[in-house]
Length: 294
Ligand SMILES: Cc1cc2nc3c(=O)[nH]c(=O)nc-3n(C[C@H](O)[C@H](O)[C@H](O)COP(=O)(O)OP(=O)(O)OC[C@H]3O[C@@H](n4cnc5c(N)ncnc54)[C@H](O)[C@@H]3O)c2cc1C
Image (cartoon, rainbow, N blue to C red):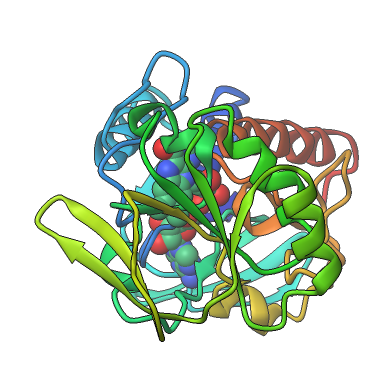
């Protein structure tokens, strides 16, 4: 019987395991499958690890866990979870294990947009977060795909890094958003995108269905996101964006004994935030085990 099985060994899951291991809990971290930043070359903005590769960040995390005998890490997928608080049955490829609590740190799946060139450039020239990749691309020619009213915040924000920002209106973008972007002094391109033009160094231009292409080095975009299949199968309550609803204080989900931390349950999606959320969830789970038992 494990105290906690953690599904997902990214920054959130590894950080939760560290907290729980230091609290002398018996923990199993299972990690397998694509991680969100699989396409990215570096992780920026993580204090003491700024610019580390995604693999190295995880290796550092696993090395920290090696000091705690209660923590086990396996490169396996959690196939399913049944049972209830105090006695969850966790299906793994090699068989079933039992756990008193579950922590979901499974990240998210980005549904890459069906624009020619988009998938190949994701993580290289197409980013979601200027805090993560803006500094390296400062003063370059940026474009941003505006898909809704949030562009009214995001567009002006991008000018912190470069004066060259063009907003690309996605099909159906409301006219008042277009007007708001223009009122904020941003250039708005309303021609439909035909494809992204790439060269050896990455994105070079945005081609439209008519007229000249827009020379461009970086594109910001926020594709739709969905939880991984394991989370969907659990039938947890989700918010309108498809994120797992978790109590802001305890990180417990709508299913008693199942907790969530990291990208799967927040819009504030960055590695350091995920690690912090994992540490927090680890502490609240330990408190629950200590106080309520079961
Ligand atoms: C292109 C890109 C670049 C980014 N760059 C940066 C950056 O520079 N700086 C920054 O701070 N943030 C960056 N981010 C965001 C950052 O990667 C995420 O916020 C962070 O990885 C979230 O951590 P997490 O632990 O919640 O999820 P993840 O890191 O995605 O880890 C989740 C893990 O769970 C595993 N998993 C899923 N389902 C199962 C299952 N059923 N069983 C077992 N394991 C499972 C996955 O395989 C994965 O390993 C970037 C994101 C993207 C998309």
